[in-house]
Image (cartoon, rainbow, N blue to C red; front, top):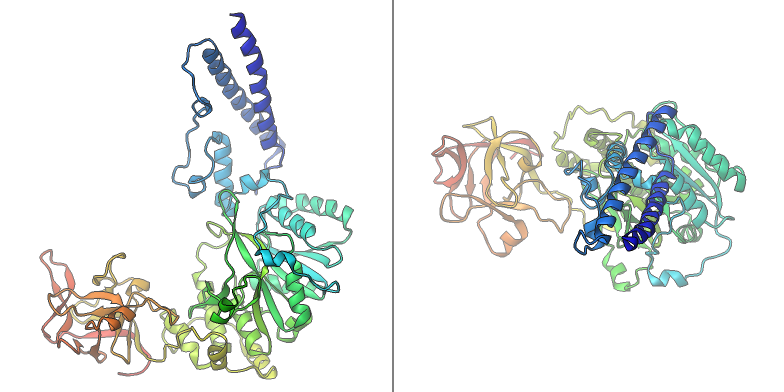
Length: 600
């Protein structure tokens, strides 16, 4: 009995110390609540958490006493952990994070996750100056840079961002940018509505100004103006030699600025971008990304693409690589950016503005590079809370870029968005000033860009018809790629989305399920298998290589006849009375494409 009491007397204080330590650690950071909870609410939350902590402590002491008294078998530490049920088993936030988190904290974490699209609850617990892994190539560590590098203004764009994330971005920039180079940090608030981005942020800026007076400028829009206009606001307020425009949900890493500034010092017409390492939205750990160029498809959606074969042959990952475009983070000579027209203020909300800048820089006397020795850790959100559906804005902006910069290739943007070549009915705003700018700068034609900068982009010169395909017997249904994985086309209620996008070209190929924008594509072509009645889909390059029956004779409003088998693509009712797509002897059925590039 004395031994038991002695053990309990030792264990209980230890457990109490551990619980108090972890509890105070989790309590130390102010929580961010967009609605601004009252003091009374905060007190009640803290009391509830204290009660829950004491209950858990009581259970642990009881278990420890039973174990010491020989009432329980010998258990490992994992067995002694109190199981806490997951309140949100279907939430992607808790797939790989949050085991053992108390229920009250699960509720808080999930609520903040829905607001921000990343784990703001965890961010609030992490140090503002947390140490990140150095993901640079080893050759970057030995590079020497000029002492007289240009100064830099860093612009952070945000709307309703988590306060702790903004604080950490600011702190990382201050910590990892040489003091004599960092002239200012400009915060551009695109009309945030959350309370903690007011006084609490100003208080933090006040703390910064105690050590670096006047370092931070604040610009606040009186209404939401969108990403492109926010970048313009930041650039207009910048005064350093170079302006770097960043998202606010980033962390600058050691040595991030010098490689960018050195490239701009060597050539003021180059626009440079760092490599973005991925910060996972759930546990906020950093994943190293390989250097890659910033590219796009004909819908002007951004994407990564391998650097040129010439860069690969160098076998030196520390070397800058040419890039067709830029993504959301870049740096440029401030005056050069103004000389080529700054940023297009006619863009709406989000999308296309990065591609527009990259194309304009290349066509109007500059170049774009990704600099692998510069690294920025960037949170990839699980969802973008400021817009449920960005598609209309991206489409509208893409059409604006096409009309100003793409010359005859603007038709490819319309094809990619499945819009008619004429009278698409989408307002792209006034483009007269931007067209005049192109004339004044004597910019090159877009064909030069395709030939010299982005040769892997497919020109789509051979497209005759595109859009949905309908059979005259059943005009409410459309040809559809069917289930994926799978290669059997079907007839399905028309919904006009990518699985039903079809294309007919001058080679007699019918491509179903979307048209890829690049020469290394995996488009799928319609094939007559030669026997049986079921048509199939195969990757076009492989179908050519294996000499499948993939070429069709077709004129708008007539039959689709295979050139090799002389059989037709038709529809017929199956045993369940539903229509299905078949290959059979031609019976006179006809098909139509939604849009034509030219009559055929």
